Length: 123
Image (cartoon, rainbow, N blue to C red; front, side):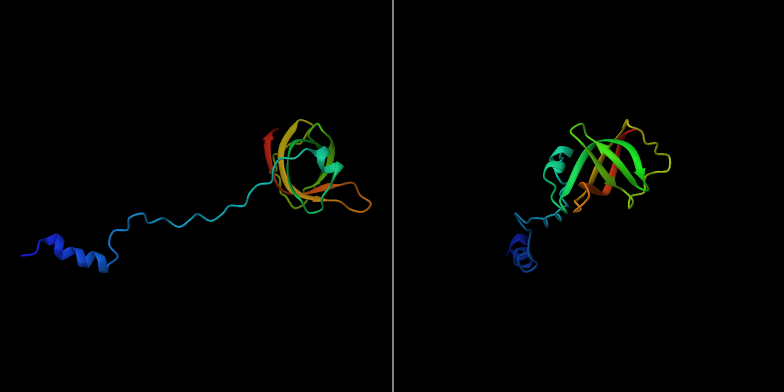
């Protein structure tokens, strides 16, 4: 008389059986953040449309949604008009932020950064 294992073996094989070494699907790739850059590098060799990450201080506002930003190596204009900062955010020369954005370099204008995101590091 066949054992229960002998009877179940064909059923397990038909159903796919236990999968030894089966792998879960790979996670979807995440967008990679650009490497942190110095303002001086951007000013020296601006590359139109290049994604950058900057960490430094918002020095002052220079118009609706526009700011002067410094990381100690240089100063560049940020266009953050598409970004909504929290209403209680008080900007001063001591406001430290991390900015991710895209370099813009007009023909007659100094290079600037179109901001996609701002993270407040310290007020």
